[in-house]
Image (cartoon, rainbow, N blue to C red; front, top):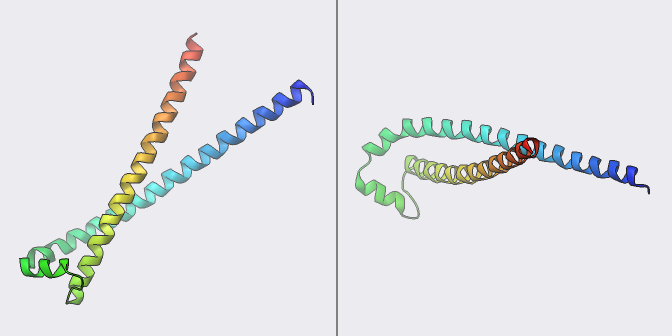
Length: 118
């Protein structure tokens, strides 16, 4: 294998890597967008339900904290709380990932600029 064809192959590989990275990025952003909409929906639902929470006395809240809530409404409430909590956690994870990727991109960009400057 001569040097030129080897270089060509190497360049192709680099290109492929870039493309896959871009795809991953795009996938992540769409995922986050979907997640955001989900959270917004959940939040609106929470707002609707909040007045129910306000209505509930401390006793009922204590009951909710126990293993099995008594009424259907409370079951729903508990389930919702758990769901929202989980989603928030997931969101935080995704945000971290995104910031990491953004930082990496910035670093790359800066490196490129330095190269151009010199």
